[in-house]
Image (cartoon, rainbow, N blue to C red; front, side):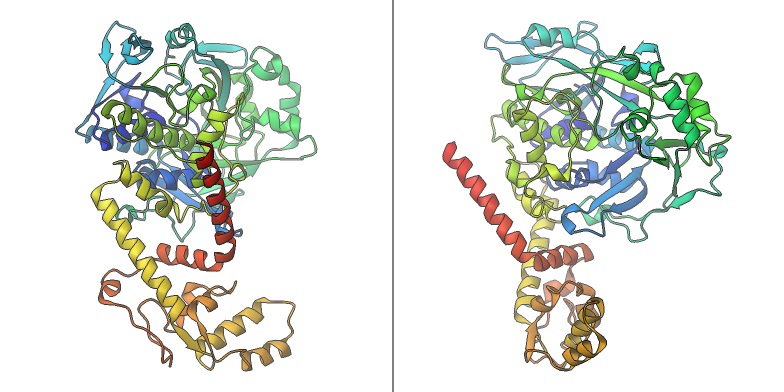
Length: 594
């Protein structure tokens, strides 16, 4: 029920397990819609997308296919917190996901507003009933209602029943769930105005171009197709911006007191920023395109509950937007949710067998959090219908597992967003190893296709062979590689003077070093090995122990992403080993309790 990001992943995951699926949605025109920022990824969220892809999901493939711009955040820090973010074309993304759903032979799409659950005699779900009286029978049901359950949008004091702008809310389902004994609550979120790109003066704004070195969400390299990138821009609030907001706080739903629902802490409105951070003279505002063929621009960081008549004057206080035209006003939306402690780790409800909740109905915020829950709920709904093994992800094994554990074990009363700090084991839960952690689990649960599994096995074999080569291949101390490594190490180390560096470069401490030992050094990369003939298919630089690659490695060489992942594993081996021991200890303790 619902064809947002959670609903799409749930439906496709159930189909991959062999279940027949009916996907009911209020409108077929807004499948996998991005009503707020049309972007995928970011800190912790990108790890979720990589994990969804590793389990056979679609979000990463769609983001790679529909991106307008890509940037890697936190790249100056360690690999554990690298975060890929893609600005996407929201219309293209929706069309692509609908096409993918329509190509699935076990899936049927249909419009309908579900108002009631059909139950059996043993408190087990038997199907759903729609507003117009149609009944659809099924042994399991997944509710992914987003912001539509009794949705109410606000622009200043003006309000309208809606799930999002221009779309009617879902009515009746909340009342039915309350009758069945579920606890419900209210949350709110908001979205900024959309403005006309043609009315923006970009000449004095700071350009934020995409990365020239494009990275990818999907582990399937056939989806790695580069496309022209669009530029985002940075502007800032001014003293006049702050004055207008302070003078009119009483006209916003939150500060005016007529909306009491909690909003997302980590995505505050502009008025929240002004009130909470009084010491800040200005706040960054990003101007991000919403599509390749339309003039709409998303004003990131500028969501507001102010009346529409004040929104345009407020926008025009921003540098570059002095003559801007507003296409869509900002608004806040208030909606019903069900605290997720009423679900178990499979996302099946504790009260009614066969009923699953996922996405914003569980109190989360964000497309990625919704999609991850949808995949898990859909896979387990199929398990109930088909009588096969459930997909249960422990907290210590993935960000998805951390997300679900937090939802199901904590009484959360504000929108939940995934953060890297929420995971105690983020060093071993990196984006680059999501497939090695989760693809075998996905394969065992019928979520990973034969092609993806063959691709994964070949990749794993290449990594094992290459690691063995790095451990056994030695480079002579008098060779060019070792000299380059030592020189680079001392060049980067500002605590050493030139004489010390020169002396050390002439007198290596040993006769030879393994490639693994050299690669472990902070300033040595895989490119260094390749530059001196020690790459996966290179020569030996006078190395008597150098080993050439086998025919398989020459036919299917390691990709740059595989090399990067292997380099990370080598450089952080000690820390990773220690954290893997902690993970094993936690898993063992859980096993004893169970």
